[in-house]
Length: 393
Ligand SMILES: *Cc1c(COP(=O)(O)O)cnc(C)c1O
Image (cartoon, rainbow, N blue to C red; front, side, top):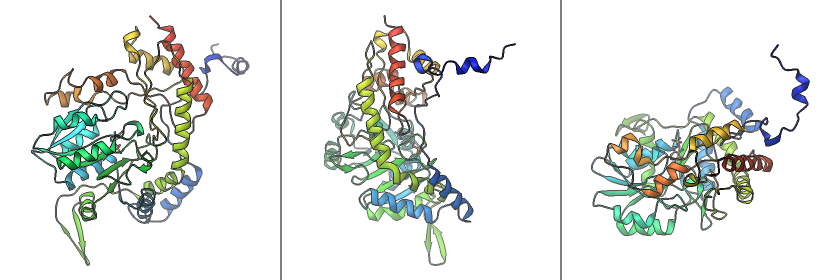
């Protein structure tokens, strides 16, 4: 008989090390029952694709972003692609992107036929190093695409001063930064073209989805065309002016987004509290390299310290496996982008961007989402301490 007697399990209510507690993923969306009911109503309404919910969601986002014009998309990737197109960026053009970010940031540049030009990140902020951007500008450079990494805004004053002086468009990849602020102004409430992601791991989700916050009123109509087949409606007819994409959000998704937006401030406050708990409790030997603390404007999309690999006999894979064995999910955000096969094929190589490569090699994303408790964070910290101490050289 291999079946254990049930009472033997019950006899150990509080196993040491929390090993038998529920698995903690590194990210988890928080959808409340009100949203579940609201989605059911949309599903029953007879109108499930782009309609009144999308209109309400765009308008609510606009309100949240100080009245800016906002258009919803099916993803940040789609929003970024359309942003490049509305800037007329294509073959022969260059766009400056950070060497450490999610692949979409650079992939979209290739998708419109332009060339992504990588620039290293700052080790402390993990953001595009604005001081290094100038040297990467050529007569072909049309835009800079910074990422507000993990919700920590880039130095917007320096970025926009440079962009204005050199005549460049700015397309902000704000996938991590809904609810982040720079000098008390929300990301997306100012700036040129700002793209948000509402993927389930992000601070606000529509399941899949995104949005573009737009500065130039004259560009809104073309953005709408590029979002939906290139269709321009006139009277009772329509015309096609260019081959647009198909990036319209559904009403079902927008309904989820409306519920999320109502809770966004609360979500981000909780993320900041939990990040503060990590700073208090995360003490390991050898120590992890902790992310920059930032200020109240940080929305803490992720908490990603660097492993002290130079002082450990194990690799990141081992760390991730040993954390998983303790019931803790650990992510990797992100490997250096220029070292993927696609970008190596363009001539990029190891050694080009030392900060991006160091972060790419050693970063680990620990669980952080509003439903976590202080005890959960303490459990993650204890597991990190155990794993690192057990391998100390
Ligand atoms: C998530 C993410 C994207 C893509 O977002 P989607 O909505 O999934 O297309 C782009 N850039 C960064 C930095 C991201 O983290």
